[in-house]
Length: 424
Image 1 (cartoon, rainbow, N blue to C red):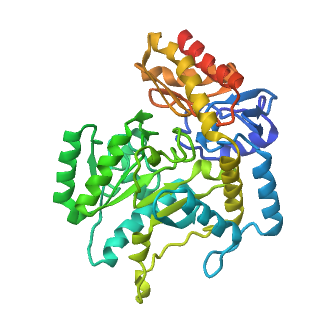
Image 2: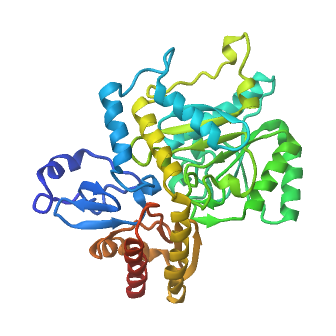
Image 3: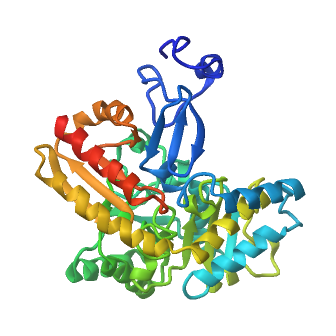
């Protein structure tokens, strides 16, 4: 890694050669930026520069950074009890959060398993699905997943990501061999998928997908009808449906949860990211009553044998409860509608630029897709020089700002995207 002694603070110089960064070739990496403060939609660098954050820390900081309501709740919980084991003990923030999520989610999604990261919640969902059938006397070990989907980087979740996606392509001989399909985009495709699922149901525990938006797979959008077709297919075949709302949940797509736009109730839903407002690692795997009931038995081995050390983390749950307070008391859906209108108006001119392949908007997600992906790395420092934090990937320049962003700050982001792409 490049010697940064002359341009970065001591803590950076002393520690940078001991850190391992995500999604990064450490031999050729451009030195990461040292951040010393976050506030609202702004990040402050060690040298005093401020960046308007266009992606809200992978869209987790939905309310902006350091929202006083969340910070106060966390401070109060920190003084009282930051964490206690969840084996044989429970705490108020975790139970309160579970009740609130059950009330927010559709149907009988009533049982919450609270863990840390989004990947872990998907692992738990997959484990639930497999054991659901084991407890019924059926051995089903396969999952049907879809091209372009991403569900995490842990070993199990890699098995339900697109195997051709660059991050996990090296692990093809190691990860679980599941069934990759294309998402049905028409009634005819949906009918064929349903028949295929029925024919293979004896081996399939669940179908899993991201709803409406395939995030890390390239910010690909698809209509709510597809989710309806998947629900119908799973019901016809007697297969569970897992919906990964880690990216899409909490207003990002224009409704509290993306599944609301399809009017379906999955068997299992996974939540994370904006759940805690970007303040604490936290995830929840939520199951319907019939899934939970399959684990009730006099036989102790039919229990769900899973329990992360920081399960039911009181501090994280306090942050999540405060985050839910804000979703209830402040007009986040109205803000998303305004962001969507502004993104549509201000990113549309990018469509006329030579290297732009497509522009697409959904809720508080703005995507500009390029023809030539080789230009992506060169764009990153240009965005920083322009005073914004935008981190393109693959052939995608995207915006997922805090839902609280002002029109003026959002305009800076959209105009910078246009100007940088126009000059590249």
